[in-house]
Image 1 (cartoon, rainbow, N blue to C red):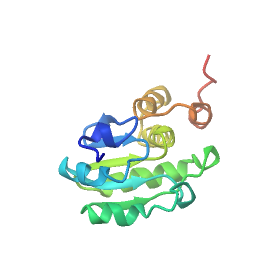
Image 2: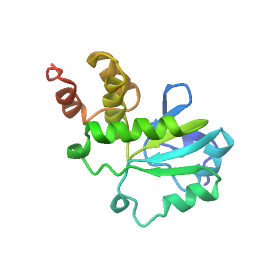
Image 3: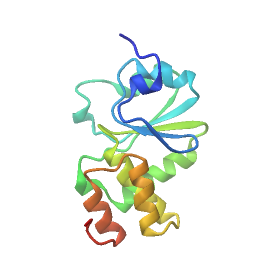
Length: 151
C-alpha cells in the first residue's frame, strides 16, 4: 500500500530543526509524498551497495526533487570531512531537506559533527545529533567531539 504521510513513508522520521527532516530509508512510494510536503532536496548517506538495486536518484528526480549522495559506509566514514560535505549540501538546498541513511543513525552522527564545526559546544552538538537520530554511532561521535564515553 502506498504511503500517505511522511511518517508512513520514512522510518524514524524526525525534524530536528525547521526545514530539516531526518530518518531511515524511505520506501519507494515516499518521494511523491515528500514533494507534496515541500521537500525539495533528498540527501542519501547510504552507499549504492546498501540500496538493493534501487535507483534512488531516478526515483527522487521523477518526483521533481534534487538528489545528493554522500556515501557513508560505516562508523569509519563518520568523519569531519563527511560532516562538512553534508552541511554544505544542506546549505545549498532551497526549501525542506530530507537526509536519510538506513535508520537515521549516520545522519545524526554527521549532523552532530557539523553542529560542532558550526560553533556549537560539544554537548549541544551531541544532543542535536541525538535529536536527528544518532544512536549506535554515539561512541564514535563522542570521540570525535572530545567528549568522555557515555556513562
